[in-house]
Image (cartoon, rainbow, N blue to C red; front, top):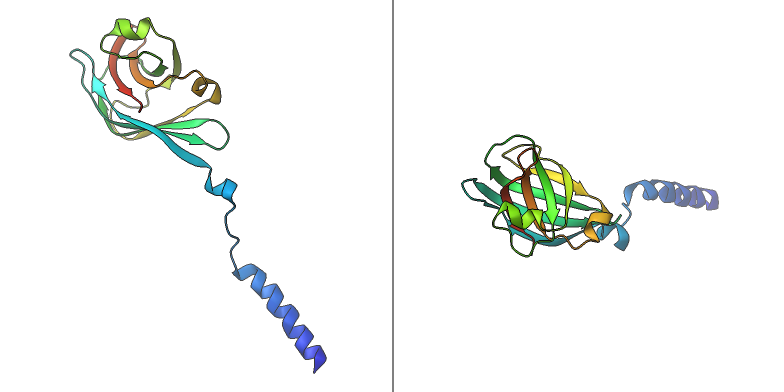
Length: 144
């Protein structure tokens, strides 16, 4: 009878380990933190619309996500981060410190970009859609 009880206890222990899911650790739960968001607006005759959110990742990088995004089409549009207080004209961006995040994936629709930790350390809180060949501002969003 003792052997049956021990065998049953061992079997229950083996089966039980596969059934009970592990609880997530606090580190796993804190992988992402929403830090800032903003709304795009066009510059001059260019249109820009949609929202942008910046989410910090556990590894120090961040993800910049555009939602319901739309901007006027143009050649070689880029996503930049700038430290300008206010962006109304192209000159405002040119006179600021900025970092290029990458080529704009599409002139409309949801899209995401990874921002390296080094760019976050610079305090850049303006998202800029920039026409690289002509040095023209298309749209911007202040992250709050």
